[in-house]
Structure formats: structure tokens, C-alpha cells
Length: 457
Image (cartoon, rainbow, N blue to C red; front, side, top):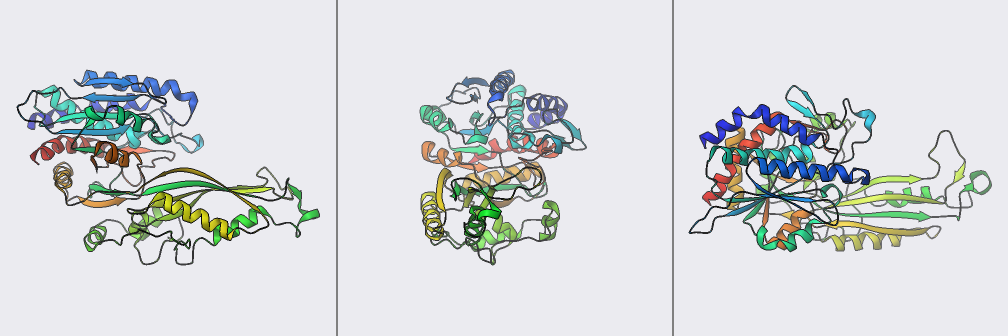
């Protein structure tokens, strides 16, 4: 291992320069004008994987290409363990541009941070794993297991092509577990293994009123205003204690165990620090739970967008003909997305006033994910984190959703190890996204140690 660790230390300057090359591709999967940029990014990534000694291929899909890269297979009398490393090279749109302090696809280094779209989500995190494997291959140090990288270009738009790809290549991708660094940790002094992800359902509500916008002077008072009706409808869905009032919404939710709550108590930071970081006057959440528990272990009902009527400069005195809200619900383990969706829709239909017409358009959905935090693979991961970061790691639930994780379990039968390297202030999906260079370097060390620790089991 010493040769691997020395190689990583000696080659950080070059690794950073290569990372900057990777970041310069505007690989925005949500915008069709960047299709060529996604293809170019996939080609660069495959070429880089070949350069460091991996067998890399680009797989065409109905959407954007998937890159696979495998370590050289070693002949052995006994079956060697095989692990998959998953990541994505596509990124979120950078808008609004005016809030960036530098161009989003021109990496800028300030102190020990690198600013660019995709730096933490997810190019920096998957690139750290590639650099660790490069250190093994370039120093001739035997890897104790076989590895396959699967890096896709559609994660930010739902991974539509990946399930088909997994089914088609199920035999080649058969593995002990999937390693994913696309999440985060509270701080470099608190490296973390994520053992749960929240699920999600999405839908859009539209209330239709009059056949056209009406003069508010001529008709106001005699016609229900769809914007007002929608506001009143949504306001009924949460009580003053932060609890969702929809019957059946909490069906299946399992209380946190004493062990889990003990892990939550180890998380750093205070409510005051969180409040300051996100810029709110006061926090709000479901009563009876800490803010950390509210953000990762409890289901939510969130209004993501709300629109109706005139939005231009000045005023326009109308009763709008419609009002619309975009909604997502985050779900926790044992909640069934379709059950929750049906419960929500049934309740909305029940409480919708007769003065407007309700239209509901269903969106995507995914189950929550949970893996035992006391299993052998989890414990191996915790040892690798401690060796790399020099601090006792913690176990944590993640508040976000990675829908493809459930596909890894259903199609490949493999659990996922969530070894995130991002920090809470990395601004993923926001202007001025960044990635800590300390996390980048220690992430490489973590990955280097991880294969040794997993192979022991």
C-alpha cells in the first residue's frame, strides 16, 4: 500500500490539472443544446480511463452515453470479489449565471476549494476513485478485487437509460456491492457512511377556474380565484406542528431505533449554525424530531413551484383562469410511493372546492433505500474512512434521493455503500458549486484503502 499512497501524494498536482479538464465540459443533461458536450465528455472520460490502465468502453443508449471501465482481470484459482463504482458525468444547469462569481465551466481555485459546476456533483467524487485505482495500476500494486466503473450521463434527469443497461449487462456487472460517492459528509472531521436514502414522488396540481382571465373589477367577488383556492387547499395539508395532515401519508414509517438516534446525536453543528448557513430567521420542522432527523429520516410534502396570473412588470387587475403548484414528497424506508401518491391524490380531490376544477399530472417516483449499517461491508467502509480522514466516522441517513440505488438492488441484487465526499456548503445544484481539495485528496486515500478493507471480508 505504501507505493500507492506515495504515488497519490506525488501526483496530486497532475490529478488536479486533469480534474480541471473534466470540469470544463458543460455536460448539462437537461438541455438538448449540450448533447454534443455530453458525448465529448464521455469520450474524454473513456480515453482517460484507458490512459490510466483500465479497459474502457462507451455504450450508446437512447439518451446519453454510459462509460464503463474495468480493471485488468487477474487469473485466480478462487473467485475474486467484484465491486462496482457508480458515478455520473452529467451536471445540473448552471443558471442563474449572474449569481456565479466566475464562469461555471472554468474551474477557479480559491484556497483549498475548486469552484465549478459539477465539481462536487459528481465529477470530483467519481474522479477521486479513478485516481486511487490509477495509483494501484501505475505502481504495479495488485488490487485484491476486480472493479468495474459505471459512469452515466443521465443521473440529473432520472437515469432513464441505466435500468435497461443494467439488465442487458447483468452478468458482467454481477458484484458484491456498489460503491457510490455522490452524497456528503458533515465535515472532514466527521467522514460518513450513508446507509439510507429518502424516496420521492412528484406531481403537478392545476386548479382551473374561469375559461379566461377576468377583469377583477367586473367579476371579483362573484368568481372564485384559482390562485386563492390553490393557496387555501395547500395550506390545509400541514398543521402548526409541521405534520402532514393527509390520511395514510405516514403509513409504513418505522420509528428510529435507539442506535440510530445515538448516531444522530454524534452529528456536528447546531441549529443556530444551520440557520445562519441557509439564511433563515428561524427553523421549522415536524415537532418531536431534531433538525437532522427532520432532514433525512422523516417524510415531507414540499411545494417546489407555485404560479398563477400575471407575472410581468407592474400590476394587472385580473382573476387568473388557473393556478398551478409543482409538488414533491420525500419518503422514508417502508413507505410505498404508489400508496402515498394515491393517498395524496384522494385527499386533494376530497378537499378541492367545487368552484374550481382539479387536474393532477403524475411525475416520477422512487422508493427509499436502507441497508444495514452493522453489516460487514459497512464496517469495512468505516475502517477505510477512518484511515483516510484520521477521524472516527459516523453513520448517517441521507435526505436526498438516488433512485438508481434501488435498481442496483432489484436488478443486480447488490447493496450500495454511500461514501459521500461532499460538504454541506458545496452548493450542489446552486451557483458557485465547489469541492474541497482536501476531500478530493482524502477521497483518493479512502478509495485506496477501501478495496483492501472490503477484500478482507
